[in-house]
Length: 129
Image (cartoon, rainbow, N blue to C red; front, side):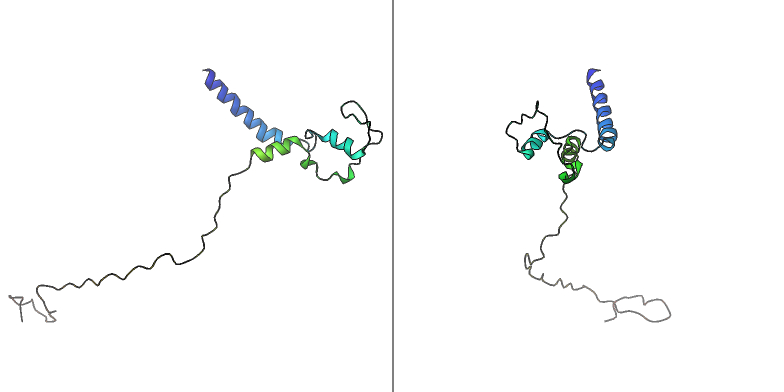
C-alpha cells in the first residue's frame, strides 16, 4: 500500500509542477543562484559583501534582458522537459553494390497444344502434330 500511495503522490506532484507551477509562475521571481553576487561584481565596490551589504545605487534593470534567462524555475524546466532528438535526415545517396544479372529461367513444355479457334468442341485426341 505504501508503494502505491507514493506513486500516486508522485503523479500528483508532477501534474501540479508541470501544469500549474511551471506555466503559471512569474518569470524571474526565483533567481538563479549567484544573481546577488553578479550584481555586486557589476557595481565594482571593494567593500561589497553580498549577503549583508546593501548596494548604494539600485542596479539597472534596463540592460538585463529576458527575465526567463535568470529564472531558476524556467532554467530547471527547460532542462527537465527536453524532448528526445529524432534525426530524420536521409543518408547520402551512393552506390552500395553491383549485383550480377540472374540467368534467364527458360522452361520447355513437354507437349504443345495449339489453340483451337473452331466453333465445335476440340477433337477427341489433343495431339495434332
